[in-house]
Length: 451
Image 1 (cartoon, rainbow, N blue to C red):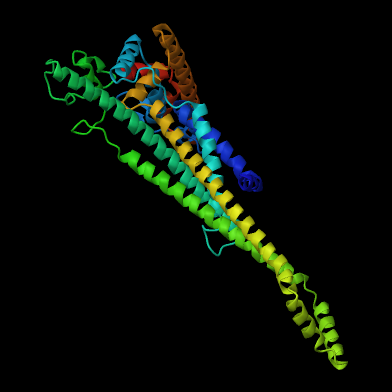
Image 2 (cartoon, helix red, strand yellow):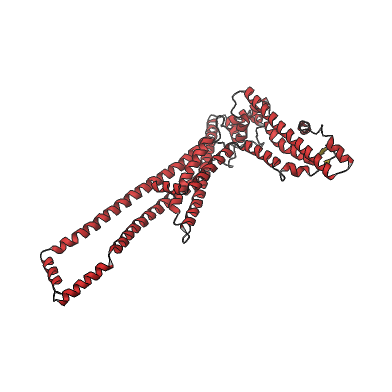
C-alpha cells in the first residue's frame, strides 16, 4: 500500500482529475433529466453558433397550416419533450404506483449518488493499484513516464469494465429472484388446482399507461407481464458467470504479476549490492598489493604466504575465515525468503480485497435499480412522494418552470428573427407575420399539441 500511496502522490494531477470526473459522472447518472434540460438551454443560448442564432436565420420557413414559423415550432417541440414528462395528473400517480407494485419493485430505488461516488472511489484505488503493478509490462521498451501513463489507461479501463459488469450481474441476480418468485407462485397455484393457464405473459404489452388492463390476472402473471424473460421463464446466469470468470482472471493475474515484480525487486537489490561492493574495491589497493608481492619476491619471501596458508589450514583457520561469509549468505537467504513470503501473503490479501470490492458492487446492483421494463420510468414519475397531494404540487411547479423557460427562449428567438429581418429586408408579408407574434406563444403551442 505504501508503494500505491507513493504512486498516487507522484500523479497528483491525474488523481484530482479522476476524482473530479467521479463526482461529475455520479451527478450526471443520478440527475440525468436535469442535466439534459440544462444542456438544452446551454445549446440554445450559446453565442453565435447556438440553436437560437441558427434558428433565427430561418425567417422564410413558414407553416401555412399552423401559422407558425418552422424555427418557432422547432424550439417549442424541443421544450415540449420535457414538458410532457411532467404533464401528469392524479391518475398518473395511481398508474405508476400500481406498475411498481405489480412488478414487485415498489419501494426499490435507483443507485444513490453517494453509492456511485463510493464505487468510483474504489475504482480509482483499484486503478492506481493495477497501474503500479502493470507499469513495467504495458509498453515494453518505452520510457518510464510513457509506461506509467499506459498503465493508468489500461487500469482505468479494467476498473470501469468491472464496475459495469458487476452492476449488470447484480441486476441479473435481482431479476432472477423475481423469476423464482413467479415460478413459486405459479407452482403453488398449480398444486392447489387453481391454475387455469400456461406460464406465459399476456399478448398485450403492459405499460404504465395501461397497467390496470391485467388487474384481474394472478399476481405472478402481472409480474411476468412487466419483465423481459426467455420463452421458458427460467433464470439465466450468463452475465454472472462471465463476470465471476473475469474477476477471478484479473485477481489471479494481478497477484501473479505482483509476485513477479517482487522477485524482480529482490534480484535487483542483490545486483545493486554486488555493484556497490565491486565499486568499493580500490584500484590503488590492488597495485600496492601487487607491489608488496614483487618486493617479497625480490628478497626471497615468495613462499611466506604459502607457508602461512598451509599453517592456517593445518590449525583449522580456513574454516574460520569461510564461516563469516557463509553466515552472511545464509542471513541474506533467510531475509529474501521472509520478504518473499510476506510479499506473497500481502498480495493474496490484496487479491481477496479486490474480490470483496467486486462482490460489493454486485451487492449494490442487486439492491438498487429495477428489472421491470418501465419500472425506472414509474419511479422517476413518483419521485418518492408518499401522498398524491405532494406529487401533484411538485409537478405543477415543474410544468410552470419549463413553460416559463420555453416562453423566454421563444421570445428571444422572435426578437432575433425581427432583427435579422430588419437588417436583411424581406417582403412585407413576412415582416407583418414576424411582427404579429402575440398568438405564437408556448401556451398556444401546448393547446395545439393537446389537440
